[in-house]
Length: 386
Image 1 (tube, rainbow, N blue to C red):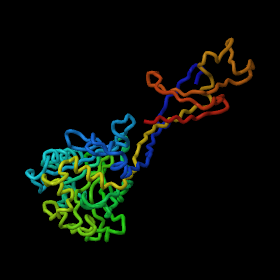
Image 2 (image 1 turned 90 degrees about the horizontal axis):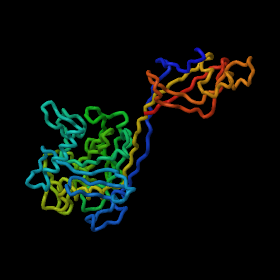
Image 3 (image 1 turned 30 degrees about the horizontal axis):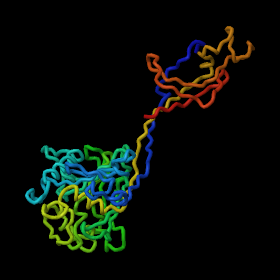
């Protein structure tokens, strides 16, 4: 390299790419979802961090009172009904809204079949099977602020009370995607998703397995979309589903298209969706009941950090001079101290990245100047993150 040359072109061996996944733990307590903030009549008796809308299609949960400038949106909650549900529009309050919510979520997350029909949510993710379809579903749509690029597979953990909304939550279940890290599915237009399973979380439940001695699927989690879909069957009544509710229920009682018998004192979610003359039949009131069943929720988010690493190599005969105007004084190299026998040298402080037409694109600064002369070589590692 001549003394007047200060640029060097990168070749394929001078750069490489890396991908790093950063994770952050996200805890959401039940008290935050229902109970932390005082209720006000202005918010129809709900907590100050719960925002409702005049369209009555979903609720929004915030970490602070939603009118506060420091409030952050956590997630939205809604309920949907499939057009193929056995529920009748004549007995359902706001049926069109509930169908619209279901169709919108199914369209985005499931897509269409070969006949152009919107696919229903399937409990095992196999759209071609005739297995259990989730035709009355709960939707938790998490904020991108929390999810970042995606929910980490295998990290989702939701503890909820089971059974009817009018009773206590002494019967509980832990809902997890325990097989998500190695058993996720990819047949969704929204990306990868896993199956959620419900297991007993306290000794008051007689079993955490279904009648086939398997953990019972209870929903789906879409990792990149940040959406959790839960079956309404989680809230089958104690009297119908047995002492343990959903987990110990006879699977036949959970098959879509059937109409279980409900006791008057213990209405479940499907009952609330399907009967206009009973308490809590609107989406907003159903969301209130679901929030009050929250005990604890946690997951890890994921931030994907892509990097290009450039190896800036200065061989022994390169970059021994400087383009700084102060490098010379009286036509002599200042750093040589006037000794003509001293070999040329420079001190590297900055690396500039240029385009093909010599436009400066990025600058990297060293923590301290590095001496460069014909007796040494340097390799500087520059990382660009995006």
